[in-house]
Every structure is written in structure tokens, then in C-alpha cells.
Length: 124
Image (tube, rainbow, N blue to C red):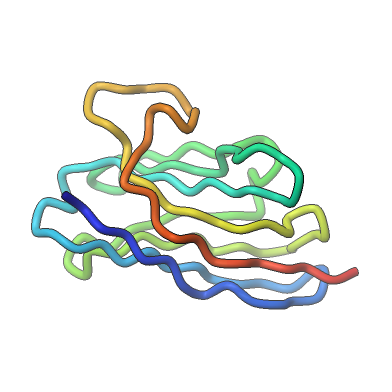
């Protein structure tokens, strides 16, 4: 069982940057694709980005494409989300999760082992 712990959230002004980290326990971290999701108040959790097991392939939601970058360091069992040019609409709790084997969609149901989340607040 993989356990995930997110960190790096905070309060930032619009146009600023933050880097989120997701530390995973377990020696099989490098076997899994990973993803970031977010949930704003009163809204459903939505897909943000995903990265394959080696880091060679990434995919982003249209809303963050060109501003956010997902990466991973398998030696450190950590996945990152670099967020640049932040907007107030990026305000949300951000979660990392492990993709379930054999899945391919960008929906909550294809991911598991959710972390506790880290709050990102972007002021205008």
C-alpha cells in the first residue's frame, strides 16, 4: 500500500509560483503513474496533470497547460507540481494520487491512494 503526503501549498499573489511535492512511501513508487488533482470549494475534484512511471510522458488539463509542470524523482519517491503564472481560479486543495494499474482515463475513479491534500490560495 502506497501512502502519499503532499506539501508546498500556501498563499500567493496572482502571477506568482508555487511548487508542490508529494512524497510516497514504499519501494514500488517507480512502478506507477502518478497524478495531481484539485478541488475548489463547492466543486468536484478535477484532474490537473499526470506523469508516467519513468517521467517520459505527461498530460495536462487544458486549464493549466503551459503554466504547470509535473515531474518526478523516483530516487526520492517524490512527484512535483511546479505551478507558474497562478490565477485566483487555481485556488483549491491539491491532491496527489497513484494511477490504478491498467487504467487510462483522467478521472478520480482511475486513481487511488489519495494524500490528505495541500491548500493553495491565490489572491487577486
